[in-house]
Image 1 (cartoon, rainbow, N blue to C red):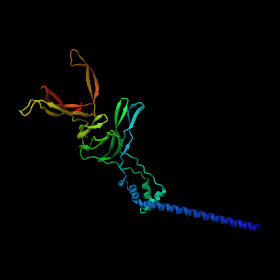
Image 2 (cartoon, one colour; image 1 turned 45 degrees about the vertical axis):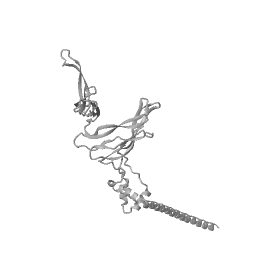
Image 3 (cartoon, one colour; image 1 turned 135 degrees about the horizontal axis):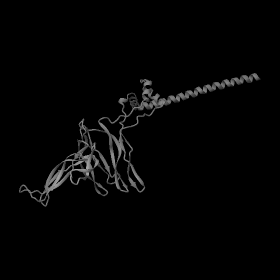
Image 4 (cartoon, rainbow, N blue to C red; image 1 turned 90 degrees about the vertical axis):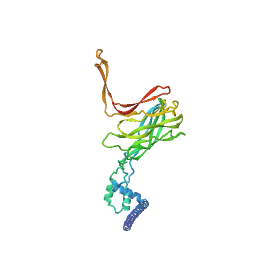
Length: 346
């Protein structure tokens, strides 16, 4: 009886061990089948969008020929507007920056195996090492810059009155023209109101002659009227651009009526001639400064001797040349007007 029980126990253990092995093998086969099905599903998805994956693969293997999006993004920039009843008022006016993260999203093992199967002709080691590299996105390039494409003028009421802030909402790579001239740049005024208006304020862009300190700047501006909640509002826009130094002369127009005596019988003194005079203005700043002395105490006996002077640093862009214009007003009195011909640092 004891022998029978021992034999039965041995048979039962052997059967249980075999069943366990069979179950494990069956479970592993099922897991392998599920894994293969998942890989087949991923391969099917890659087959549907294989071109996209191959583009990513080409960018990994050949970073120089990458089709990565140009890196030009809007980044936050806080600006203090003023004080309000509830505290300080600050806005995110934004700025365009040509810099992005060079990090790539790492893929897992299944994705790597699926891409490898879809591109079986590629060396696995080369593909793996290429995917570990961090490829930086393309910059805007030498002939373009990262500039705003949408700017909105926001109005904020502060304790010191209404303040306007130009807020950049979007940026993009903008190509530079071959020569210095005015290009379009639109700014939206009174956004979200019945008076919302888009104005082309313009922008100066383009290269100047190399080897000098000239830059493409605005040399003539004008104002345009737009409808607002308090009537028409004036917006200054760029009208002309030229290559100038940092301190330069910009145009500024003035209209005068000249009641000069008529030269012939057809002209009447009651019909004055309208003259447009470009009086000009000095715009910009000087990169170098100089010291200027001002005498505050002179010798009583000899006024040419300075006993005490004050020294101050000046760095001003001021007129250097003038032109005189004469005209006669309605009463027959001669009037004169100066126009700036040249600007410089003094």
